[in-house]
Image 1 (cartoon, rainbow, N blue to C red):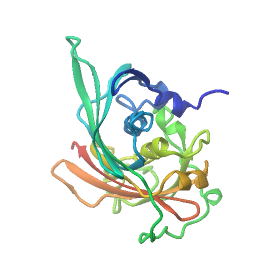
Image 2: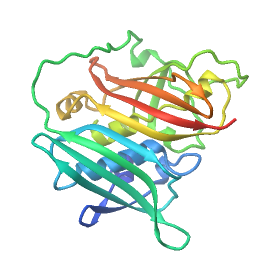
Image 3: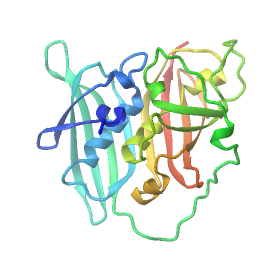
Image 4: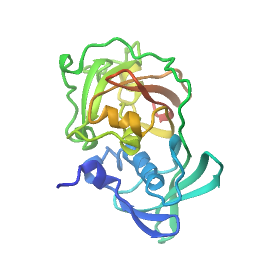
Length: 273
């Protein structure tokens, strides 16, 4: 069977204790370097395939220290504290600098945990929206590779067609899934948490330069819910809360078609006027 482009992009080879080698994939290229979501998925993958992992991810924070250059990189993933039911991780991606020395381009932390059955409820209900088949697919520039790896059907907040600087909302709601379809797991959900175009582009209706500085993902569902979701659609909703002094935030939620809240995510983004 042919490997899915996503699995090729996050593939890692062990090279030593707590260390892996990987390489960027043109399939997930962005305007500068790779799509940030695929980089987040790569560090998630380093934890998922680590032989000392306890449980499943419940939290991931990724700090984008510098642009990841196209080509090879090294991932370090190390469990720094293991308790009875939780485990704390520190991850890093490095690439050689101009002198050949390893330079940090990303730092990350994660928490994994053994999930157990308890009283549970989703206090953030999925909005009532049209079914995926009733919503047209968003047309995106083919010059950006990574957007072709997802089917996106916006319900509200589609990419502006006129950049007149007069936007009045940053809210987007859209159905999204991997293209071609792929069974959901923690790595792909990490990438999907970053699938939104910059909120300032919608709120301002102006395509200003942006770059994610830090992103956190909270995983509210485990492997059983991912299996139930399969390769189905996710409802992805995001909005900004404040745009000020060159930075804005984004808060987002991802539900499956059954209305289960799979993940929430927050990020802080740099923008330039």
